[in-house]
Amino acid sequence: MLGLEAIAVMDTGDQRLERVHRFFSGTGATYDWMVTVATFGIDRRWKRRMVDLIPPDSTRILDLACGTGISTLALAERYPNCHIVGVELREEYLDLARSKVQRLGCTNVELVLSRAEDYRSDEPFDCVVSSYLAKYADLKSLTHSTKGMLKTGGLLLMHDFTYPPKAYLVWLWRLYFFVLQRLGSPFFPAWCEIFYGLPVLIQESRWIPELTEALRENEFTEIRMEYLTAYGSAIVTARK
Image (cartoon, rainbow, N blue to C red; front, side, top):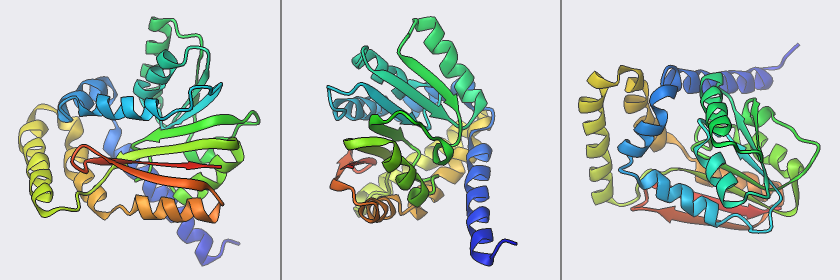
């Protein structure tokens, strides 16, 4: 019989999954376009920064919550001799990633349908990366499982949105989402949940301190944090 603590953990996990499905259901076909337009192309710059931080001698890289394969394919292009494993929770998004891999003829990409926290691999990775996963994930569980899949000295890299710490940036941040909500919702109704729910989640998320704590508990070293583009997002890296 499950105790109250176990039930609470299950409820938290269920809530996270429910939020992901609620936010992203029906958005796959427009995701690449929307993420580029809605960020004014800045997402591409963020992805390039992620790729730049990957150790150049990596032979195996794990991309958690790979979505439609934007970061996965960027890694595959930069490191053609490296085996890239992309893990994605939603079949809708994974199908799009598969189509891209097939169309581009990528032979160094493997795609897996799985929740990030549940994925396991017997063969270790030089690097584990993720973009936009941290605010949805059970970071204690994810950090623990990631440690088990990394080689000694391997790099963990997590990127996600952040709530700006400065008042004038908060004003711009709120204006940005107000415009998305008022102008984007009528034309892209499938994105309404994200336009309205994402700013609340970003503001409430404590993913950076929670991840940092989890990394320390799991004895990761060289923990570093880097803000990107007017505090719009951040990258946290650490070594096993």
